[in-house]
Image (tube, rainbow, N blue to C red; front, side, top):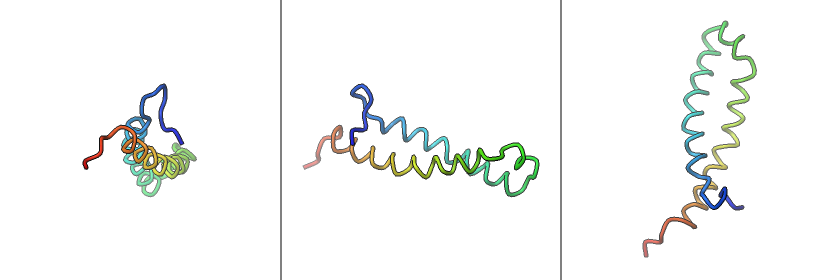
Length: 76
């Protein structure tokens, strides 16, 4: 699978999205657990963010492996 857009690696963009989405989703999960008003306001957004992370994290790892093979010089 080619993880690039217009010749640029996709990995940095994916890493930044995962780095931003993990703490936001964790905070939303905590709010769901302890604050009923937040549970009503957030609704289905929190589980959908968790599902997005479930897909984004392995995709980011695969893009990172491709990035390393293609862009990082070998240390031999």
